[in-house]
Length: 315
Image (cartoon, rainbow, N blue to C red; front, top):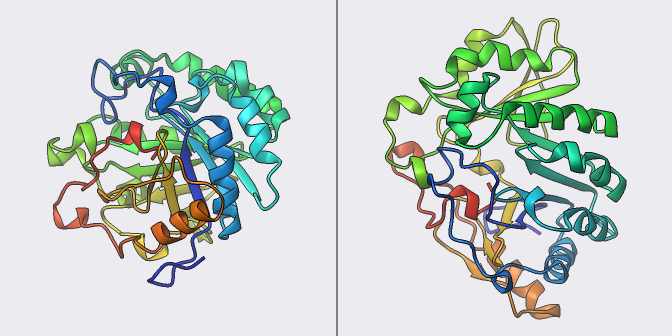
C-alpha cells in the first residue's frame, strides 16, 4: 500500500496499553495517567482483527508498544495470536525491560522476533530520577534474561537529553561493542511532557559521533542512520526526527490502545477503528494511510501537533 506521496506503508506500531510501571520525565506526569476502564482498551480479538486488516494492505512488520506492553495481562498470549497471522514477517516489542526477567522466555516461546529496550542511563541514581520509580537493576536483569532466552541483536533505545545523559554517550554506545546489542540514540522531541522544556535539552543526534571511535556508515532499512565504530561488532544508530527529518522515508502507521489510527505520530488526526469490521475496517485503514502528511513541522521550532503524549500513542 502506497500513500499519496508514494511511500510504501509496511510497518504498524500498535499500543496495547497506555499504562506504565515507570513515570519517565519526558513521557508522563509525576502521577502517571488516569486509568481507563478496561472496556476502553482494545481487546485481543480487536487487535488481531486490526493486524489482519493491516497485513491485507501490505503491512509486514508489527511492533507492540505501550505505555509498557508487559503490564498488559496475557501479553504473551497476544504475541502467540499475532505470530499466527500469515504475512507478519517480523513481530517486535518495545519495552522498558523492568519485567523482562519474568517474561523474556515466554515471549520468545510465543514467537516474538525482536526486542527494543529503553535505556537512558547506566547510572542507578540518574535512572531513578528519569523514571521516577524505576530501578536500573530490573532492566539490566531483564536484558540478561532476554539474552538467555535467545533474543539476539537486542536494540537499546536511548533518548538523548542535554544536561541529563549526554555525559554518558560513550559509555552507552560501548554496549554495542561485542555485538550483543545495537544502540540507538534518539533525539528528544517536543511532545507531551517536554513540549515546553528548555531548548538546551534538545540535542542534535550527530553530537553522538563526537564520542565514538572512527568507523564506517553501514546500510539501514529503517529510520536510523547506522554507524559501526572501529572495533565494534554491533552498530550505533542516530534517529533524528528533528535535525534530519526522515519523513520522506516513513513507512509506518500507529494504532493507539483505545483503537485510533494515527497516520503520523505528530499529527492531531486520529481515525477511530473500533466497531469497524471486515471490508469496512480494511477500507478505513487504507483511507487513513492516504491522509499521512508529507512531514511534520517540529524542525521549524514548533511543538508536535499531537493531542496525546507519547505513552498514549505508542511511540
